Amino acid sequence: MSFSMTSRVRRGIALSAVVLATGGLVLYRAPAAASPGDPGAAHVLANGKNSAAFAGPGVHGMISLSHTRVLSGQDTTVFADVRVVADLPIETSTLTVGRAPISLAVVLDTSGSMSGEKIEEARRSVLRLLADMRDDDEITVIRYSDTSELIQPLARVGSIRQALSARIARLDASGGTNIPSGLAHGLRALDEATRGRVRRIVLVSDGLDSTRAQAENLARSSFASGITVSSLGIGLDFDESYMGSLAQSGHGNFAFVKDGASLAKFLHRELEETVGTTVENARVRLQLPEGMRFVSATGADAVVNGNQVELAVGSLFAGDERRVVVELAASTYRSEVGTFDIDATASWNQVGGASFTTRAPRLSLVATADASEVNRGKDGAVLASATSVVASQRQIEAANAYASGDVARAAQIAEKNEQALAAAMVAAPAPAATSLDTQMKAYRSMRKGFATVSPKSAEGRAAAKEAAVKDMGNMNRSTF
Image (cartoon, rainbow, N blue to C red; front, top):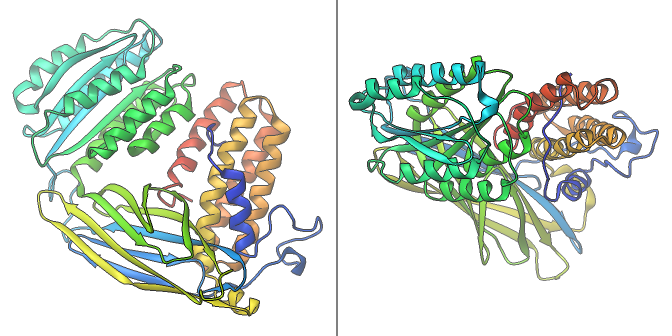
């Protein structure tokens, strides 16, 4: 059994309906007897392609639209699937070849609930991290409970390894949990980072507090200044929606471990990704035509300035692929609107190198009065990607209902998600259909779990947190 994380999902229900309706895949209005093979389910065979590739030193990507045609005389929702990929080097070795200079902040929960095995494993894990780091890496360590304390100011590992190891070995656990205090301290510590270093905060907690909005704002501000924030929840008592939102806002990783013993693996992965970072400040800009407006973006921070939409993707390690799903609205009520041309540029900074900007070929949408042309011109892969992202958003909503005790509503949302994914499979090409099938089966298992496992049980809480990692990750990388 697996469940998804609890969270407030902005516009999740409305966006789901739009995605499925515009793709010819009806979620709410399908006849009760409709099945994936039933014409009553309003399926279309979508095989249109409207894509533009871009590439430059160290980066390549693709921008794909869900439509080639839009219907005249109405508003049409169009999705853009934006992919940005950091190229793999010719030679790869996790911690040696092409290694980026890094500044890493470890922000560690030392509240009373971390006492015993958890704090012992935390000490061992940080010591192992120190052993894995190179002498010229930079590290800072902050502990937090009711307040925060700087255990180690930012310094080269080679100069403080022995002294810091001794201080880490003496860490104890007491007091409450004040996540913003620790996060803010980590941000201040990284202000001292040597110019040109990749900066990342790794925040670890086994609890929760009532300051989510403050912590999210801190994570967003860190991303805006070029610092990635990852979060790890330990045990069954932390709030996965809170910790997951920190990673989303800071464009880092979110993970869950049942006990402190797995903390070392998480820290090692964070180290590998940080030293493997090859691209920073990756951005894609869409210049929208008259008659088209931006609605929302999932997977990037979006800034709208007139008709330009700037999507901030952030840092990527070698081989990393980021996905951004953008919802646009094209209005063809005005008779003079016949085509919509979208211009796109991508820009990024190479770690330790230059900045680059490249332009993608222009993308065009054509208005037509022929509904069959519109259906034939839909891209099943883009619609599958959008449906998958929306399903993750809605599954978070289902888990929220489950956690609050509304099991019936949770099961209803999960079942509709299954229907939506099954319907999208019909129009999707084989690789996308396989991914949707995997996601659908995971949600089916989740729905069965809603009915058989108490949301307050250890099994239910653990499954919800494990699935949170999957659904949260699916919102900026394809994880199914």
